[in-house]
Length: 101
Length: 101
Image: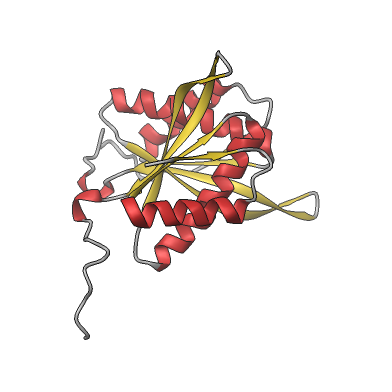
């Protein structure tokens, strides 16, 4: 599953749509941001995505953590925002149609 | 219960301590930030506070939302980060002193 990388110039609504899309597919989305502007855009996008997903009946939560990422040979600390169902144990398969790889 | 107001110059560790303290008292903490720098500090503080509270046996999640706040007569949009137990229904009274094992 791809990480959704957010920058300070990312459009909130576009990121929110990406989060909701990845979440619907995987019941999980990882959002990564480096720097204050990027973290702010990411959080605003998660507010919107939570609204979209609530309309689909999903209560999602945000689990922020630090991760070290390597960019051009340098290690930087990013904020990873994991978007998950609040109660994953109660989740129902939304559309059980998985193809085998 | 007081809202923990974070600015772009707030110290992450101080905010994290405040969040953990308010949470332990109320099983809930509201963190408010206006602007990218403040949201970034707030999220970093929540990463730390999640770690502190995990050591106490609390799995907390972050629920971001928008709120309108009035500042000097003007309405501004703030980000409110609600910190709650992931599974509040399973919560046990923290003061419930356990017998020795």
